[in-house]
Length: 499
View 1: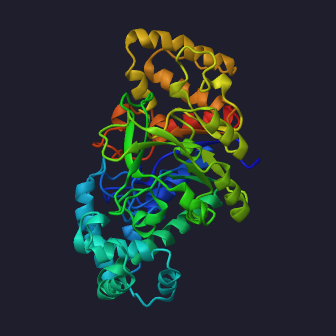
View 2: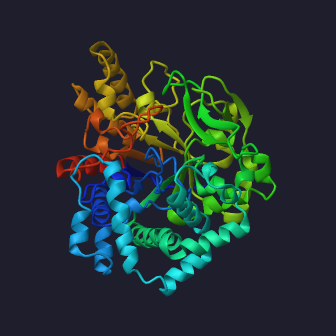
View 3: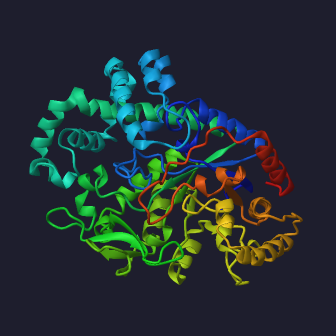
């Protein structure tokens, strides 16, 4: 499929945008950021999953894979609707800088409940949204969590095993107090998101959205579809997801997500997955499937293991799923996140689908001339990055090199620039970080994406996530928008490398 226009992208999650309310929102800051991208000549804005986060605050572990994050709701828009007053808006303000999720959790839901208390639940558009049923399982699940706490396997048995009459009575008992509140936050989120997406698209910018391969165990997805996952009679996982030891971690990554029962999923032609991809294709212009390699073969770790060293590779759905996607949804624009432990099978699957893979420049300079990530080896049907949300910032990566390692790195980077016909002199690590940006943008890849941290030349303190660690992740937030001089450099590079 030839659907990608050669262009430059910037990776910046909504949570990382600056603002007064503790986390980025779908309000003024998103519109301002989109205008800055437009002025710089950027054609793609990449974000992380927009889902409601659960314990650990990771956008890759959500209470519902199709949800929107209530934290991203623009509170000032709610004030304009008459749902909040000045004092309540002020009470939601938080200091600039990194996201403080604990305080945000305490403050934000109180404010959203105040807005809900003034909302007309008989509003025609809202009742149609509720009646559509897309968020019925989610609203029930969140209402049960509000009532009982814990994960769904600790709910009273009648609810844990989804006895129809018990759930009907429960929904009735919490309909106004909780059930409709959770429908309300999704209704408001998606109204605001569609408005923002329309604005961004009208400026000629496409949004690259992200869907994780797996879903969280403690989610409405697993609770409502237990037969589609590898669970035992007590609804506990028997096998969980992760990856074996690789360049990110010596003991591998133990994610702990329950694994799909692909055989059970194939019984209805992968209907759950088709609906998930359809929902994502309505939200985003291009979908990046995280951990794409699990579609070919996936790593299964016995539940209860302390790390990911012990596990086995099992077969995923492969082309059966993507043939069904094409049959039911037509051509969906997808990027395959094909990083990590690769083999001939996943390469073959990606080639058969035609999806572009990802090339990370931070992995390029190991001295191997055949390294797939070297700029000279990057194919047109790919998406090039300096690094992703799982990498250090490029300056952080370079600062992590010893003087001896950096001395070896410099000629390798200069050689890479030369192979692209690019003259970009540099001496120190800051200059080398800019040269890495130039290398990425100059590559043959149809799309080249720079994290906003690399556009601004930020060091490792601005890193978004460190895989296999559970603290201090997902907190990075800009104190202010990228300065003009950084955007001017980006604009110049985009023009120079015809993006």
